Image 1 (cartoon, rainbow, N blue to C red):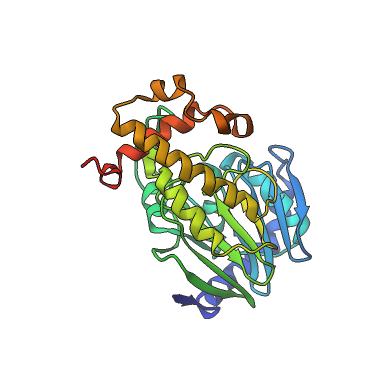
Image 2 (image 1 turned 120 degrees about the horizontal axis):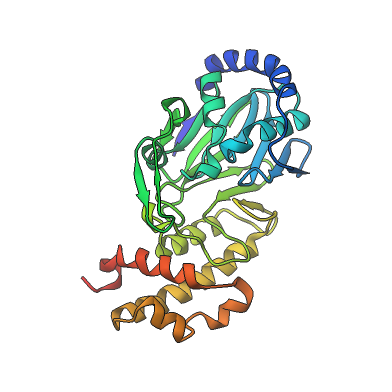
Length: 310
């Protein structure tokens, strides 16, 4: 367990405070890119939706702690929403729960203004390189260096005290990508999990950058070790959910990992699995299984040793 204390951020926050003073003028010249909605969770914490991903914002004595930054196209609207809820406070820490562009739209704003942009090292590597994602048929160019995370880590349980707010964060393995992280606001029992949870839908695994069904199983179990019956959980999409959403995802992922693994061993294709209705007992609740089965198949083949095939 590594402890990240207040002293590490104080020097940079002087620059961020200066930025906070000029922020209202900058925002006055910007029109919201899209309608955003804000939900107050506590007196200190708000959930902002509509910027491409859920954005969790909480106040500390040293400035704001933000989990995920939405899409770059929505940056002005998101900053305006943050300013309305938390006037003239700089962003002290910004967490990227993974590399997807829906999570990183504030990076280039926060880093150069003295805030810490924190992510798993794998996320930084994806943001700093060119790569092709076949299921999107899209090549991603590296983000400008100013948008790269300024602080990275590897461990599953990191601790920080930011402006008197205790929190833990850490690597979730590879459920959605290979750089997924969680952030737990311990004093309010609010847990942000990014793409590692997809409430009410099949898990979304970006196999091109490491996500796979076994990672969903492991991450769900890990998060259930943190969440209590009172924990409010925030995923990248959807509203606030409870521990039951993680229990449901674990049950689904465990059952379907076994079924799909068995079908792979029998030489079955994704089409075979769809034709045979492999997921029929889950479809009414979770929707169209086609992409889930394709991504599960590709991801599981990347872990063939775990299946006992090689």
